[in-house]
Image 1 (cartoon, rainbow, N blue to C red):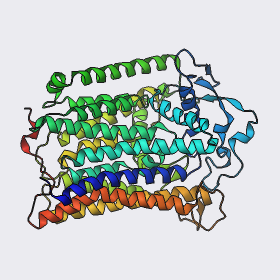
Image 2: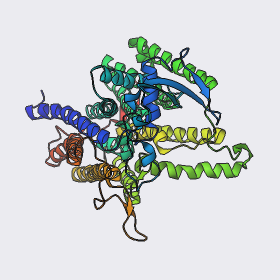
Image 3: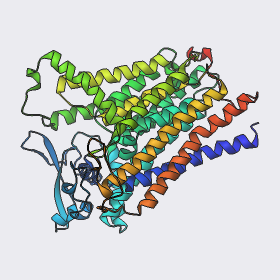
Image 4: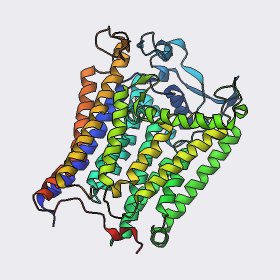
Length: 531
């Protein structure tokens, strides 16, 4: 029977993660003006259209604009335009919002708005659109309703990441879980999660799906049978991922592929949980059908209509696509909002710490139920999809589009990230130092993002970086004071660190003292073999 202290720690971790989710979601939702993250107004319009049925098949009003792209018109309340006019600041980091609300341009009660989010599946938008409808129905102002939608989006997205951390920790993978989850929780992910944008939700679903894939394979390889709650959670995670963005379907298929690799649980799942296998297959088929229908009926305009991509030599196109991956890495970590970029030191440090920490933790690991090469294969195929899609369609990917695959790939490596060749002290220091770096950058990015809108980004001295400093006049005031925003971020950051890193510290100290009772379970060499 577990000791009292162990039971208490087991209850503190979920509580700490819950507090972290609420604190971080609230802080990031209020750290920027509504509309301050990529395409947020268009996402709001599409969410309202889904919740009211205006953009669903058979009801939509599709119009082809002058660029050849399909746009869907949505009739919505003018109150949902109660956010800062983006023409004040978008594309000019030195400018702060300050020229009035978008709704001031539309005196009528309702307005017809075109949205170009036409190919997106309706799941995420249905949830957020329902929040918008409920907020207005209960008497909230349009601005407060939009902030509520941001907060709910953040709780759902970050809640899935917290769920993934718990799934991994309950199988003894404390060290790997802390590093992998925090490395995937980049400032870009935090800002997207707490805005009306499905990218953050997609990352959360990918991380949770990957955690449940390795959990199911682990349980199948061990003595315990795969339990129904685990299978149900995996099904829900795959459905959420499949129906979030058009190309998230690819990540879902790749995760299913990892699940079905040799030694996987397909036979057992078919015997004991046939309903889940059928439901997952039906969801994937339906998503493929949606994507096919949307591709045929809703056209995306050219990104650069001045040049025909097909006329560019193949070797030049290949070079352009390969060089784009450097941009993707930088954008996954340090490109927040429309135009806010973190210092190169933060981006390079984030990537470097991730590489070093993962390398130390995987060195000497025994064969696990989900092997390290499985994670590498997942990442390699994801990159190949990006390259092939870019070569065929001339689509310039952004880092936020690839982030779900990278974050999921890190989680798939967790069974091998147990520091088998490290002493207990070195293991603890590796996790503590790397986690402290990730958490520090996260909190610093929150301040940087907030001050970009409050004060603008200005050059202080020639040849030195432009900074958002509290030396200029305030150009924008968050919904609450900046002290509250930063305080919520600090609480969320500290509780997240305590929940993820605390068990590693306790286990390492126990192991160093010669008592391995609470130490993370080593991955057994036989785990990779089928039963």
